[in-house]
Length: 376
View 1 (cartoon, rainbow, N blue to C red):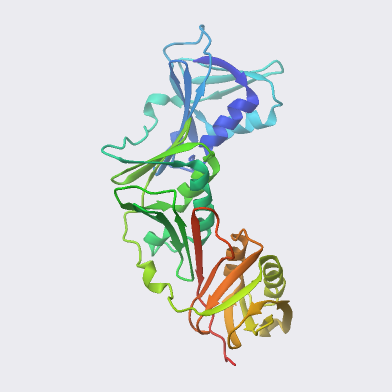
View 2 (tube, rainbow, N blue to C red):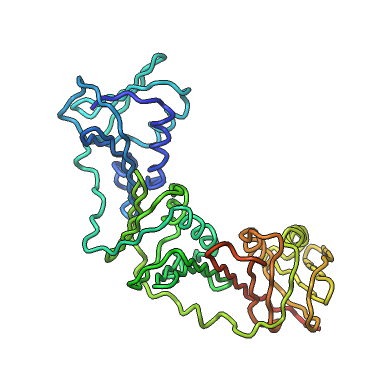
C-alpha cells in the first residue's frame, strides 16, 4: 500500500478514530490503527473491543504500491505524534510485505513496524437492526446536555450511560447518578416504533466529538448501536441493564418558583462554594421574595462566605442546601440568561430548567438537596 496525502489531512482522520484506541492493552494490536485499502478509499479503523470507529477517505493510491498488503495495523501513538510534530506538507505512506511502514517527506524519513491487518478485530455487523434518521447537531446537543450527570459507580452499571427512550411523538435522553437527574426531551428525534437503549458515557463523548451538523443514521441491534455520519461510523456495545424508574423521582408539585440571572447565580455559587466543606461542598440558599442569600462555611478551616443576589420569588421564604459542584454543572448547561428553579420543601428535590426552552427541546434538571442542620 502506498499513497501521498497532506500531513494535516491524514492527522485529522487519525484523530477521528483514535478515541477508540485503548491506552494500554494486553493485545498490542489494539494499540494500533488499521489502515485498509478498499478500491479508491482508505479506511482507518480503531477499536477497544467495546467501541469501534472507522473513517473513510477518498484518495489516490500509487500504482507502485504493493498489492499484497492492503491491510496493515500501525502503532497509533507513534504515527499520530510523528504527524503532529510535522508541518503541513505532503507525506508519502508506504508499507512492505513484512509489515514495515515508512513515512517520507521532503525533509526526512520515519520508519516503524506494524502488524498484519488480517489479525485486527473487525467491526461488529448489526443484523436486523432498527434504523433512525436524525440530525447530527441534535444528537450532539442531546449528549452534551445529559452526559455530565452520568454515574461513575460501577456497582450501578445501568446508570453509567445515557438512557434513550425513542417514541412516536418525541424522544427522551436521561442521565442520573442518584444525586441529580437530567432529562432532555427532543421533539424532532422520534420513531413510529418505540424502542430504548443505554449508551455508555465514553461512546457518547466520542460521538459528540465526531458528530457533524449533517445527516446521521442510528442503527440499533441486539447488544449494539451504530452511529453513521457521512464518512465516519461508530459502533458500540449498549449497556444491557434495566434503567431505574426515573419518572418516580421527579416531583409533580414544586409550586414555589424562583426566577434568577443564570450568570449571577453561577458566579456566586462558584465563589461561595470555595468556602464550603471539601467533603460535602454544601452551600445554603436562603430564598426571600426579592433576593437569595447564598452562604457556606467550613468549620474545620474556620472559613465562611455569603453573597446576595436579586431574584423574583413570590412564595414563603425558605432555606435549602445543595452540593455546589452539582449546581455549577447544571447552570453551565443552561443556555438562557435566566434560569427557573422550582421547589416544594427543603428536603425534596429542586427542579432547574431554562427560562425559555430551545427549539423543539424540553430540558429538565433535578438536583437532590443536602440536608441542613436546621431550617427556618
